[in-house]
Image (cartoon, one colour):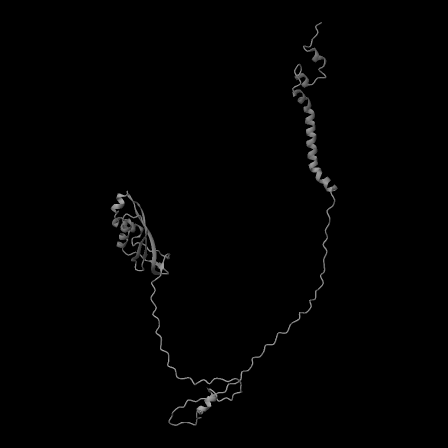
Length: 281
């Protein structure tokens, strides 16, 4: 009768007590930590699951427990206060000081003075008083008895003064019309920008000194466009020299009249600034 022999007799004898880790690490070194890790893994997994479940339950149950254990918040009650009426003491009004009445000045003695008039039928009139009366009191429209007081100087009757000479009105110099820098309608060359370009190309000559020295650039001119379209006050405000500034002024003086600028529907004087370009091809 044939009997079966297990190739690993030790394994056959203790197979029921051995685990999968024991089988894998049979006849191997178990001191490097892999074996211990695999043996401790089920315990670590169980602890992690229990800890997660506990934290999860604590998140939901914790607020309820805290609500039962925490002390109750104090209750505030609103009380209505009744304010009693306050009676203010009457304000004492101090009497205003009485203003002193102006003292009446004593009446000044005066003697009525009448200018004698010559007429054919003189009416009944009062004669002028003698001159001795005017030594005691100055002349006046009526004879008034004085009330006394300080002496008053006797003023002679006013003499006829000559009428002042009529003064001639001062001559007002006529002011020059105002020069505008910004207007509703700007002045422009009669032919527009294209006509201005054609005029400059036809009449502008490049100065020889500038050509020999290879001078190029812009000459900025300022001028006034008069109400009739003529140009005045021509000046170079920034030039490049070598005869270019003089040539730009010469050409500007040859220009025909422009269309004047307008402000409020009327032609006015307008200050204008324009560059002229000198460029060598």
